[in-house]
Image 1 (cartoon, rainbow, N blue to C red):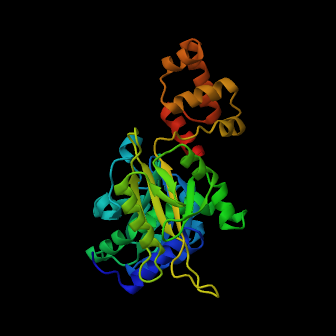
Image 2 (tube, rainbow, N blue to C red):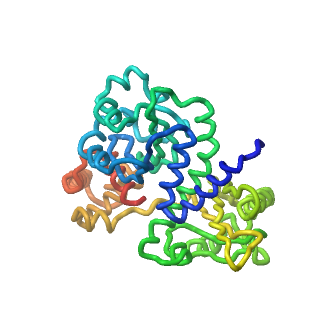
Amino acid sequence: MNAISDPEADLIQQIYAAAYDPAKWVEVMERLSDAVGGLRGCLTRIDMSDGSGVDAILMRSDPAWVDAYARHFGSVNVFKSSVSPADLRAPVKPVATDEDCLSREDYARSEYYNDFMRPQDVDRSLFIRLGLSGTVASTINIGRRTGEAFDQSDLDFAARLQPHLVRAYEVSRQIAQPLGVIHTLTEALQYSPHALFLVEADCALTYANRVGEKLLERDRGLMVLRGRLKPRHSDSARRFEAMIGQAARRDGARLGATLSVPREGARIPLAVRTTPLPLEDGPIFRAMAPVLVSVTDLESDVSTPTHELKDLFGLTAAEVKLAAAVFEGLSLPEAAERFGISINTVRFQLARIFDKTGVSRQAELVKLMMRLAS
């Protein structure tokens, strides 16, 4: 493994600090942009099927352009996908440039380039993929002023940071959003819908939120043995201990990592992420820092946003039940059989759902519900 330079190690620590303080994402993007010769940037969540914007954190960018994107330029975004939602989940480059997405000639002829990017003095773009939820992609976008393309050293630098950016962003999405109304980290962890644990360098468990306690009770691949959190599978346990040690160390680069933890009798493993907690110097010196462990049960169903459908769109109880069945993947005949009604009644109810929610196809309804559930 190549040694990590001090500036890069420092940036990695700043990336993990952004997991707990969303404001620090601006500082992270500033340093990342400066390292690759960028001018401005943003962290966006954009629906890649139609280009519509969801939200953004801006770095040296004018918010007026976000409004312009929402009003018009999202619809002509040349980087949106024309493929199906299923194809969007196919493996993609974690780091890419505008030239990886379409030819320079096509890009230069587009309205998106000439009327949206160039007025912002951006000629080249670098994309770092952070995640995909349904058709909504989370990406750090770095824009460069000059006509010079990003070179291989820029791409390599971004690729080395990308796994840390992904882990920090996942944690940020899980716990940082409630911090505006919740005043302590412990409270934020407790109210998170995700399984979260705090452990010491020796894997001693110091805290588990409600979801984490339930996951342990269900015997889902993790256990607490002599006060220490560990996977039941011995090989995973050794790798987990090494991950915790790397994230807890005070000297050098404190790195997060991701691990698949198998479960007895289950086909799909748990996804376990370790993230270093910020280590502040002060009157109490700690040789090792605590580590946040977040666990995703990939077999758990995404909760159907039934209350949101009822409150936002005025769906009846029967319409909510049908929408939930569509969300689960049932066909209309299967839904009719489940509810003991005719297929014509199901079609009528579905038409009413489409009318109330403003969609025209079942795929659009599922996409809408995925947004409400995320």
